[in-house]
Length: 133
Image 1 (tube, rainbow, N blue to C red):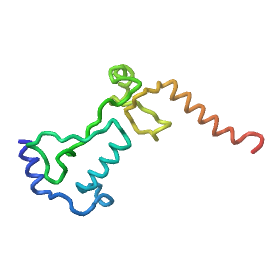
Image 2: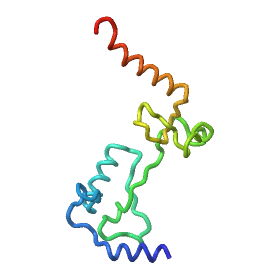
Image 3: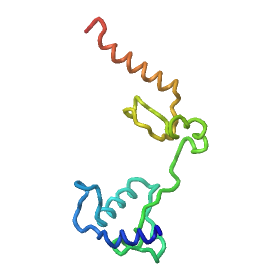
Image 4: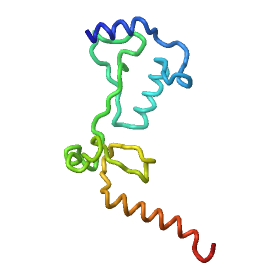
């Protein structure tokens, strides 16, 4: 059922010929390839893949059908995060660095460390109001 819906969507939605990135946030195939080439150049963990020859999309080069990342360095593996992250929806909360948003991070900052950082920021803010003005 899902594959029929995907086929219908791809048939009904033509491939972009003119850039709509600034207005709709979507890329033309040429923009996608250029952006992917830049990503592969700047981040060596990313690479292009060709995929299954039966599923090749004609608007993309055969050897650049999708992007894959491998061997991404991580100081703490995901299995080590399982015990310390399960605070809120499996995301580590870093209020002082991310404006209150929830982010999944590779290095979990403990609640004590977060409190210490908030306290230091508060002290630094009020240090401006010392004897010198």
